[in-house]
Image 1 (cartoon, rainbow, N blue to C red):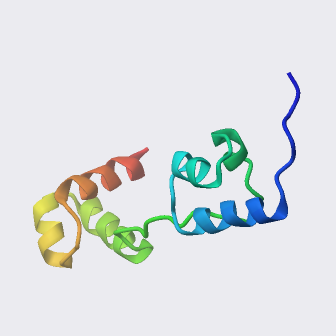
Image 2 (tube, one colour; image 1 turned 180 degrees about the vertical axis):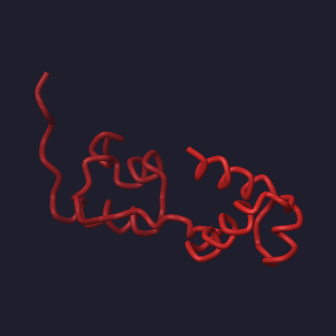
Length: 99
């Protein structure tokens, strides 16, 4: 089974615009009237916008420094550093850095 027709420049531009607007692959395929695979084969230079990290690298290093002392709990670390994340995330960072 061979490939279908290649996409026109107009269709390719529409796919890129929908990608930048964070549409799902199925929504792009539906709006552009092409297959999901054609929408997946987007140009390489288009990147998805990802959610920013909740903890900066500086905050992670402060957590590691406080946790390495071994005399404070995760809850105390969160309160001391006024972190915008939950305690489970702090515990996960501790476990990741122990390995």
